[in-house]
Image (cartoon, rainbow over the protein chains, first blue to last red):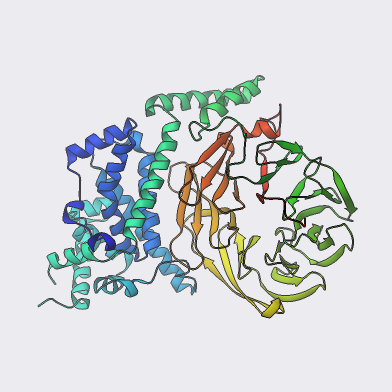
Length: 188
Length: 408
């Protein structure tokens, strides 16, 4: 069931270990398509899920995650192996997802009737209790929640990724959590 | 709600089509990676080559020996599919291509044999590939695929956008702003309406000599060409430059540089009436410029060729497949640089994409089972001896694997 719905196993959040990741990047830089595929397998689920939780649109999330990986392929030769791959990828994913969310909000406010043409079902039709609650948050607040609670970055790391002061990250997190707490039924 | 609970919810939230999306993404990434490796070498040597090329490019402006230097630079920056087939010895998937070169249209048969049809500027296949309608100056001609002329008519303005009807019995064309239709034997040439010059007309695929076009008031019009009756008209989508019908005629797309607009078409019994629905924007990726779009021959899928430039990286071209009924676009193919052509194979199982910078045609399978084939040295085939100076050949049509049926 987990495989069908794409639920994210805990060990897939920030995998693989740094040494293994460096090896995969080195081999991919030397021409190993298998190493690239391993890198992809390790990072796609979290990247795709993060995009989806921010944009709430399966097609857009796939596109955003694909774009991030294509950017990674484009810049693979220049990638500094001493730095972790995940944060670099997640930064692209989250920023593009925020941009997409803002653009959609603008379209809605401009009365564009085609918001969902060609898109997957709206989130309330497929999700559980979380998606309608997340949908109440603006995209940049969703992004902070996803970076903190799905991808497990610290507020300082999130601030660097989104070029925000740490205080702003903390206040968005606090507000986001308060709002979600109000919207999602508290478990017994 | 605790933070642990929130974490669990974020991880467990169902993600529709996750496994399929992962598979599609991997195929795309592998392909982009393979393409990237074809440019070869680690980054430092490439940078050095690029710097050297830039220096030479500056020198080109001063050097009288410019042509040879330009050739060398072209070579440096040419990417492409590695191990492309060196010559066009067959049309992958079969059928016949109509290719417009600077010297005129070429008919390319399934076995790769080809013939220059004459000095014409535009051309289109008849529905069974037995004839070609070709335009040159103020003349519209019907010719056989071996170049033998059958008839010609003259117009009082330059002739453009010839389109042979699916029945085989009519040819639509534009003479200046006048949209005209002539019978396939060259008789009864008559004006149908006034057309917008930017938008070639498109015949209703089920037949009946119904033609969609955009008129001078920027309305999309469906006209019954034998009577000249407009069956319906609706405001055209902004910036429309092309029209494409689904095979059953129930959908029409209007193509602009930034958008695709999809209209449902309500067809009355025996096509006695036909109503255009409102245009719905088909969502495309951000920062995309539409180069081409067309319904598949079976009409279930729309192929779209996009240019995308995001961030500091090189521009990319992408071919997407879109199912009009819904669902996310499927990215079929993506390269650094520009693809310029999109043509469906007659059976809908392949797309032909042109990659001028690599001087390659790519035959990309749209379903499982076939492999991508790249064919190189295309420019030289259609401009023997002048490949570097000629404009890149343009694919005008990919026609009909079995031309044995009667009709045109």
